[in-house]
Amino acid sequence: GAVVSQHPSWVICKSGTSVKIECRSLDFQATTMFWYRQFPKQSLMLMATSNEGSKATYEQGVEKDKFLINHASLTLSTLTVTSAHPEDSSFYICSALAPLLLAGAEQFFGPGTRLTVL
Amino acid sequence: GENVEQHPSTLSVQEGDSAVIKCTYSDSASNYFPWYKQELGKRPQLIIDIRSNVGEKKDQRIAVTLNKTAKHFSLHITETQPEDSAVYFCAVSEGQAGTALIFGKGTTLSVSS
Image 1 (spheres, each protein chain N blue to C red):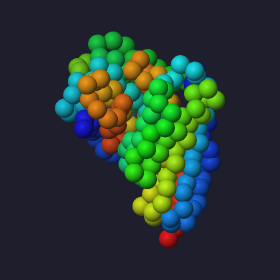
Image 2: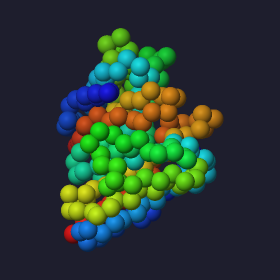
Image 3: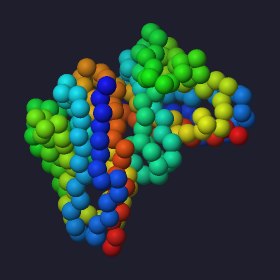
């Protein structure tokens, strides 16, 4: 099956700093990737849709200037949490939309990044 | 936008019993309905999915049924085992239109031996 990686798997940072999270599709090209956020004991909430070569589409309530998304290549999307605060502490998960020829899952999820802001 | 409701939020069963989790959705254009199992701190794992042109799909102990008219779909797990204990999420998307998945709130399934 298709493999999606995320880096880092966890990060602890001080309030006010910026953190970059990478999402890579390792063995397929993904023109579309998605970013989700999951708070403890809650569901995955879609933050934004990332399309290669164009601006991301953000969901209502998600600040685009705070959560910067760059999808500069067909295998890499990055999410930068700018001026992070403790309320941004969460589990961030990306997914990549699989090409039609790949059998199985519609989307492939990365392993997630646990962000803790002190 | 799409609204996905999932019930129950928690479900406790004895090993060997069946478990059923139900989801409803609001957007009639939705045509892809996956179910995910998520263990603590891990990524969601696809366990079964169904598209709108099919009413039922089965994979060993797991089955999904879809009623497009009523806009609801269900996950059925038979002969439950302790390792089935996890959080299960239903999700909905417009499938090959390339839209994101909208998730239900999740069901915590506990299987006791």
